[in-house]
Each structure stands twice: as structure tokens, then as C-alpha cells.
Length: 334
Ligand SMILES: [Fe+2]
Image (tube, rainbow, N blue to C red; front, side, top):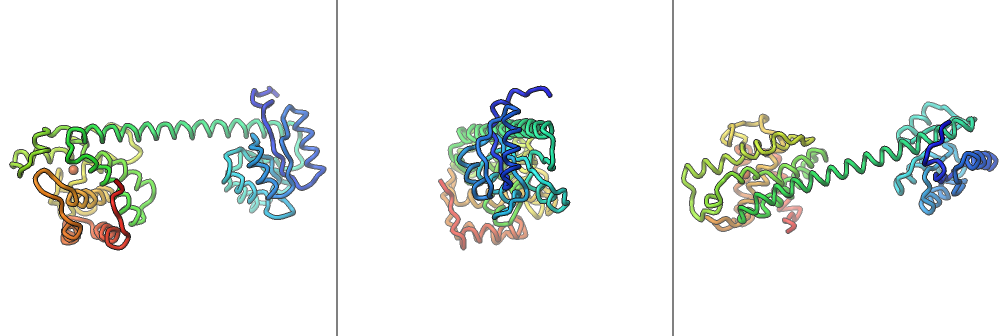
């Protein structure tokens, strides 16, 4: 078998309660160029040694006679450190293998096994684990690049419109908290967070004099302001987010009774994420100072969304928002 470059460096922890078998495995490993950094006979010992020694791989017997079994031990080790796990077992019992499978091991060896099988399984496990680690790191880097891009977009629009500076961030905070209160899945909450952070990006197209006008807007000016939903959608539509971010932005001024813009969508035709964003947007905006009016107080604001519950806004979203402020002490963290 072709020797892999990482083999010589691999430090292996053996978790095996039968001394003779443990010694045999250790000898085989050393003969094949691996380093045995430790041997453990019980679950507690294995966890302690895994954390202290940080091996490159753990070979672990599924059946341990004292304390927790190998599967529980592997789960505990995985919670503490990210290392490849290879199970050793004399049993091919379906129930045990199913349990073991849930812990996503990097390999299995059924006893008795040949030296060659041991070597191949270890090499595959090391390779699989390092490939998955690199993949996870790439996903992390992409996520932070996405995060930075979204924040840059948010900052760009807020630099032109100081009156709404921080508005998008605070709306994102409230919208995500409402979504959490409604028990939405993490993925949906993430979509809301991203969309809310840039929901007014289309205001880049609205002249700064209109955005900062300290008086009531004319109909023509209001029409220009209203175009920001569609412009925001046009800016975002070609970005392949894993969520319908552009659609949420497009719909954040749609209202339940069809009186919103730009399309006059109603009821279920409006994405739930957009309905949550709408409530958070109006709530935050009312609580903030604007060039043409001073801030409303909390009572006025909650009364306003409450009066429009079922007309403009989704009832459960409004209820969740009111609950957050009145019962759960929500406040904007800035
Ligand atoms: Fe808006």
C-alpha cells in the first residue's frame, strides 16, 4: 500500500479494555509507522487522555466493560475536541451499529481485523476528517465574507441617510427576536437577519434631500421613496443567497390587506419573513426620531401595531412583538 504523507505523523489514542488486544494494536500501529500517544481502558480515562493529548485519531472499542460504552465515550470526546474516531467492535449487531452511525464516526473495524485493514481504515479516516475540516473552514470563510458584504451594503446606504443609521441593524435585532419568539427554524431566522440588515438598501437610489427632508413629502417624492423596495430587490436579486433575501426585501412594505407596495400582495402571498420584517420595521421606525417628526413612545407604538393587527400585520407576529416589549423586557442593544 502506498504510504500517505500524514501517516508518520499520526498520533493515535487507543481505547480498549482488553489489555492484550490493546497491546497487539499498539504494536501493529508502531510497526506501521504510527505513534501511539496513549492507551485508555475506561471511558473517563479515554476522555481525559483525548483532551490532554489531543491525538490525531482515536481508535475506540465500542464495548467497554466499565462505565460508559465506546459510543458514549466517542460522543463525549467529540463534544470536547474535533478529532477523527474509528470504532473497533467484535459485534455487527444492527442496533449497536445504528447507534454508532449516529455519532458519525470516520471508520469501523470489525474484530478480528488484518493489519492492512487497520492501516487503510486509519488513513481513510485521517483523510476524510481533514477534508471535512477544510470544507468546514471554507464554509466559515464564505459565511464571514457574506456577513462583511452584507454589512458593507448596510453601511453604504446608512452613510447617505444618517437619520436611518442603525435602523436596519435594530430592525434586524427585533425581527430576529420576534422570529425566535414565534419558534421559527434557525435557518429562517438567519434569512430574516440578513434581509433585515439590508432591507432599505434600495434607498441608495433616493436623493439624500428627500431622505432627510424635514417636512411632509409630496406625492411625487413619496413615490420615489416607495421605489426603494423594488430597487433593493433589483440590487440583490442576482446574489445567490441560500435564502430568499431579495424577495423578503421586495415585500417588506407589503401589508396583509393588500394595501402595501410595490405589488399589493396580501395574506399568505407575503412571505412570513417579510411579514415579521414589516412589524419590526414599523415598530423601530416609530420609536425613532425622524427629520419630520419626533419619536413615538412605546405605548403609542405598540397601540399602533396592535390596532392594525390582522389588517396590515400578521396577528401572531404583532402579539409576539408586544409580548417581547411588555413581558420579556426587550430593548435594542445599541
Ligand atoms: Fe423600507
